[in-house]
Image (cartoon, rainbow, N blue to C red; front, top):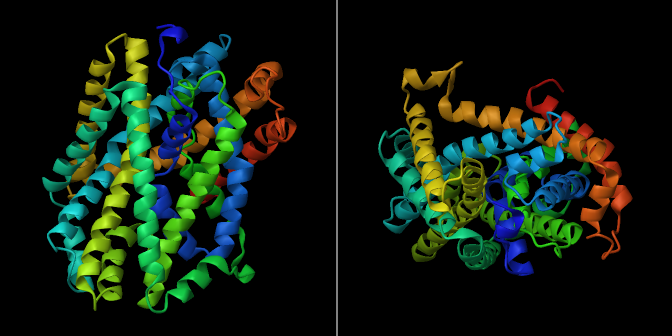
Length: 453
């Protein structure tokens, strides 16, 4: 397939919303609040925003440049630009990473659907012990999580088979505004609770005594993962960009949207949590164990409002998960469509079925089956470790070296300033970050995650 035959996004709004949808996911609505709670509130937010500017946006521009210049799926994009050198392996690493994440990410996305159902039928009302038992019994059930995982992948499949404009772009134009509306409604409801001002103060009044190495490295890692870097998503979407797309401006806009969603998620969770005396720093269990208890206590005098808030919250989570899963699915679909030369519909079906199998085994591995344990970890945890702590930082690090040190600077500059039609503001700063700052930052993230720093 030639680049002229490939679909493109039909509008600037479509580009921004689709790519922002890729970046905005459970990492913003789930991981960012509990990371903020564990790392000093406002101090972590200030560091996070700085790290997005220093690391996230330059790395996103890297993938924009590679994807748009090559007008190909992620694997072929790196191969086209490698000039016979083994840099093509980085592209294949991105495709494999995106594929594996699709499989186990769909499991967590499926949990969100179960909790929509649970909120709708009133199963999330009860004591803290009941809520914890409910999640433990559900996540270890051999059937229910698989059912919801497959449902989520089928919904993703439905969007993907309709193509770039009629599927991804159209869905993004509907889902991203809906996500923002739901988020704003929940923020307003949370901030109106008695005692909510303590949560707001925690979120926006920095306590610099909390500042230390771990807080900085946590913010650095969150900025990298939050923007869906090194998964193949950004590079694949950039291959659908038109030649008129302003890459620098688009990256800034997406970084702003990503950060706003993350901060609004904190503004949704912290006031509600502080109003009932709970500090939401409970880690990964936050959205499935801690928050149902928060909603139950915060709205105990208004059970109908609590019911609606719970339902809206898990609908919000599902939308965030879906926009990210669509971009992850597209990485593998585009690869199969262009490299294996099957129809887009067949490629999407292969990915959906394969990821359903992976997701099923990942889900079953949480049920205590010894056969699905590797090196003392469940398959779910193994996939999370391999992709999140190994593949992503390695892919991001190598991409920085590829763009900063291997690609001709003229090629990089031409893509950055649209062949001289744009001013190319901050190009030298961008290139300096890519060559020196970003590789060092990613190396620090890598070492910190493995406990070497």
